[in-house]
Every structure is written in structure tokens, then in C-alpha cells.
Image 1 (tube, helix red, strand yellow):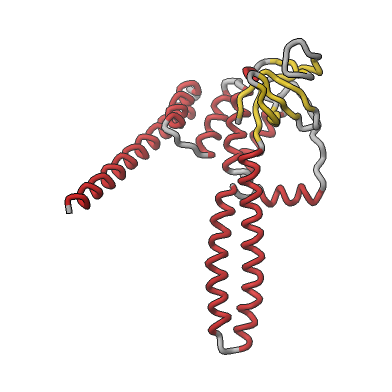
Image 2: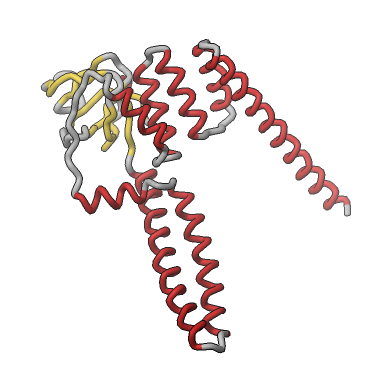
Length: 254
């Protein structure tokens, strides 16, 4: 009995602390938004950062931070947080439009490699939802499949059996598509690493040392794909396929 009471007290304490933390985060976010609306962007960012220090992340928070940094002409930070927001809500039109607007101000004009049409369509479809949302959708379809199978198994009429069977096939197909998109999104989240250049300008090198040849200069705000780490250097790939090395201190990993 005493053990049960102790467990209940611990659960109650954790729930109370979680509630207080949630209230604190909401208050910080509200205050930060008020500062942002008043044009006091630096103060707004300080409140948003306090939320991040509580290990709370959301697309809306990153989006507001990106907007505030943009108002302060901090292009690299603005792009960084737009990209963070887009990772959580990859199909959000406002985030995409704002990021596109800021990218037009960059010094580096890099033409990306054109994707095959089919690959482009698959990526756009996969980006409709974050990978965990696709996982929830697949779980929903798995329950639906069970219900349809039971309907098919216990149905007496041929017409109902036929409808249940066809629906079951579609349900299995949709579940597999959802699982595939969830896996692709998760794999991309884990294995595809990107970074934003924070230095005003930096040299792209042929090797991870300052003595190597400089390919060309890159400037703040440019997004690069991180391929490998070499102590204080990273091997990167640009959207046009160009590969080189940058000093780790010049970038911020997404």
C-alpha cells in the first residue's frame, strides 16, 4: 500500500511539474510574441531562446525566431531557423515562401541539380508530412485493415465481401505508402545532415587544411550538405554537386 502511494505521489509530482513547465513555456512564447509585434526583435529572440533552453521545439517557434532575425538583418540566423521550422513542417507554404524570399538576398547564386520528374514528385508527396505524422497515418491504416478484414471474414453477403476485399487491398496499399514515406523521412532526418554558413565569407577548399587550393568563396546564409567530419573541418556538397571542405567554425549544423 505504501509503495502504491509513493508511486502515485511521484506520478502526481511529475504531472504537476510538466504542467508548470508548459505554462511557463506558453508565457514565454506569449511575451516573446508581444515583443516581436512591438518591433523589439532582440527581446523577442531572448524569450524564444529561453523556450529552446527548456528543450521545447516547434515549427511555430522556429518560424517566429526566423522572422525576428530577418527583421534584424541577421540573414544566416533567419535562414537557419526557417530551415529548422521546415524540417518539422515540410509543406508549410508560409515557411517555404519566407525562406525563398530570404534566399533571394544571398550573395551565392548556386543553381541546383535538376531532379528527375518522378523523384521530384515522390519528394513533394513525401514532404507533405513530417516522418512521425506518416507513421501515425500508417498506424491508422493498420487498424482500418484489421476492421476491413473482420468485415470481410464475417460478412454474409457477397456484395459486402467484395466491397470489404477491395477496401482491404486499398488500405494495405495506403499503409505501405505511409510506411515508406515514414521510413524515407526518418532515414533523411538521421543520415542527411545540412549546415548554414554563418561567416560573412569563407573559402571552399580542396582538402581539409588551409594550405590546400581554394575552389571559390562562399558567403553567409548558404545551405550546404554535410558529408563527413574531419576534426575542425567538414566535407560538404553544394546543391549543384560541387564538393569541398569548410572549417567547422564557419557553419552551424542544422
